[in-house]
Amino acid sequence: MLRRSLARLYWALSRWTLVGHDAVPTRPTILIGAPHTSNWDFVLMLAISWRLGIDVHWLGKKSLFRGWRGPIMRALGGVAVDRADPGRVVAEVVSQVHAGDVFGLVITPDGTRGGNAYWKSGFYRIARETGMPVTLGFVDRTTMTTGLGPTLALTGDVGSDMDRIRAFYADKAGLRPERRTVPRLREETAKPSAPDQA
Picture 1 (cartoon, rainbow, N blue to C red):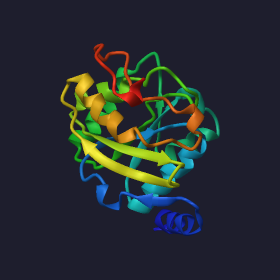
Picture 2 (cartoon, rainbow, N blue to C red; picture 1 turned 90 degrees about the horizontal axis):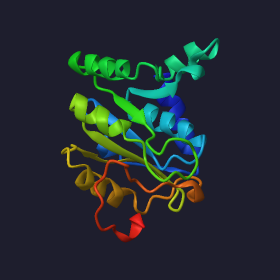
Picture 3 (cartoon, rainbow, N blue to C red; picture 1 turned 90 degrees about the vertical axis):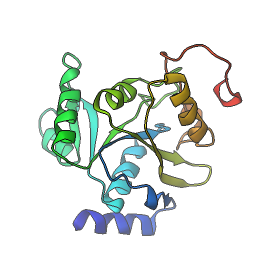
């Protein structure tokens, strides 16, 4: 396949090391991309998915799909999000799950590529509403590694689930470490924080 061949060439020439070959999901999953600190994260995401043979979809604002960019974005797995009708995205994901498709829905919960106080909770809601697990994708400039971490089933206990996610990302810096956002949702109940959460 052309995509896999291009991905092999990319990894052969790249300074980055791909890890997590054994973590490829075998069922539909929410694939978190974090820390999301640079536009280059998109290139790494495509390189990871093409090399590992993962059918990925990603959410993008509707404006990205206007005009000539639309067909290209959709060919790369893009799903246009209309903020006036966010429920449609969940309905489409549920439909694909029921159809038996194996795919990764890539979501960057830290939102824009700047330091925010909280992650956006959309990934958590979609995972709970669809029954999909969450696979932790990452970028870590300190080790020059990127790839896939564990796949977690969310329990509905937001604080406990996020503690597990925080523990995984505690030593992941992103491409631009100064823009990193600690994994934390507004919905979490107040409780003592681990050192990395301060």
